[in-house]
Each structure stands twice: as C-alpha cells, then as structure tokens.
Length: 238
Image (cartoon, rainbow, N blue to C red):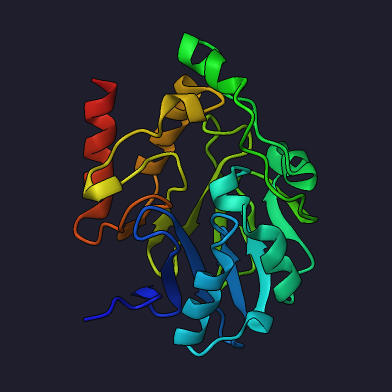
C-alpha cells in the first residue's frame, strides 16, 4: 500500500516526510482552515510538501505562516520557494538564526574536534536567502492552532528551537534529538555549533508535558513518548 504523503499525529497536526522518514516537515491546520508549516526540507522538498498539503485538502495559498526550527540547509533549503508559493511573507525563526536565513549562509560548526574544524571548512551547506517575517524568542507562544510554544534549545545551532503544542500533546524536538530508524540519538557532532550545549539544552524536552514526540529526523513516538524521551536523556547523561 502506498504511503500517505501526510501522517496524521492529532486532529489538525500532520508530519510531512520529505525524504522518507529521514527529514520531516510539519503542518498545523487552524480552525479557520489556515496552515502553519514547520520546516521546508531540502531544496527539492517543496514538491513533497505541496503534495502532502493536497492530500489533506489544502493548497499552498492556505499556508499563512512558516516556522523554521533552525537555519540548516535540510530544513531551510526549500524555504525560499515555499515563501514564493504560499501566502507567507517570510519565515519565523529564532533571532539567533535569523541572519543566517536572511543571507542563506551556513551556521558555524563545532570546532572543538579536529573533524569539526575540517568540516567547518567544507565548501557546502549554504541555501537560498529567505526573508524573515518574525524573530522568535524562548517561551513565546505563537497564535497557531490553540498555541504553539517556542522552546529555545540551542547547540545544534545558536537559534535552534523545539516546539510544544499543548492542545494536541505534540512536541517537535527539531534536531535536538534524532529518531533515525526509530532509535533516539544525538545529532551528529560536526553538524552542531556546540554539541555540548545541544546535550545540555535538550534536557528541557524531558521537563514539559506531551503525548507524542515528533522528530525532524525519524518517525514519531506515540507510546509513552515523554517517558521514552526522558529515559534517553537519563541514559545519555549517565
């Protein structure tokens, strides 16, 4: 049976796989029918996103807001095109990542290790410059489907955010924690601005309430999600 281009997590909340389960975007549908899109995947992801929107009866013009979890090419690569194709005038991103999005430049990597220093000099990772419509801050609650709370979880990038949607019980971890092949892990060190900070700030994800843990890399966890995430964090700390 063919896989659905949009995976329902809760009423009005969908995961959009843009490269299998390996890279995900998300859609929140409000009572008035408007859509908030979270992340835009790689440069070629918009076609998958538009197809997913169509599968839930939505058109790109229904997208009124686009939120980025952070300024990496696998999340912001399709952002410029999605802004062009939707009613969004730009993207919402944490203030500490905003300039990278405006200029389409890669965020500095972690240069603590030799591999990190080598990777930091690699000539790739930029993406198309994209207008920023709002700079977000920790604790801010967006007027999205009953309230979408910003959790600033820096380390993967300076302005990396996770997103909590209390109305549905969905937490989007962003890249703070991966769930590739349904196994939680930390993001690859060389992709982080500060891997140590990423580990420290991710513990905030064990301190909020949710029923479903959704990841930008990997499938969601629906059963005892918070306890599974807290268990991973405890083991990682130990």
